[in-house]
Picture (cartoon, rainbow, N blue to C red):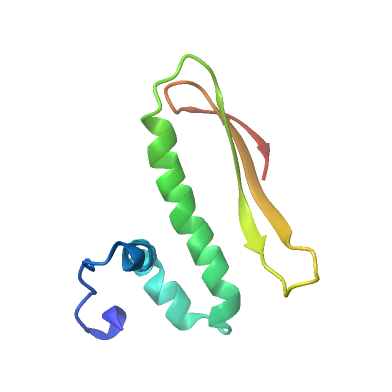
Length: 107
């Protein structure tokens, strides 16, 4: 992979593949964390949560709204057909209209 010196992926021409490209790019800062993980499949959702938290933070900081913004973050746990999916909350924050953290409602 990229951590070992391989060339990074290039932006695909097919829009269907673009989402996977951007997910992979967002995970690059977590490559070492994932490489060192005892179980990469357990660590991967936490790395994705970290990447999505950074993206959400950037979006909220540029929201420039008159109200407050509540952000609930966590990991979606998908299960096989016939079983209920789960959401594992990891954070719940309140930001003002400028994106500044006002209160951690839960963490």
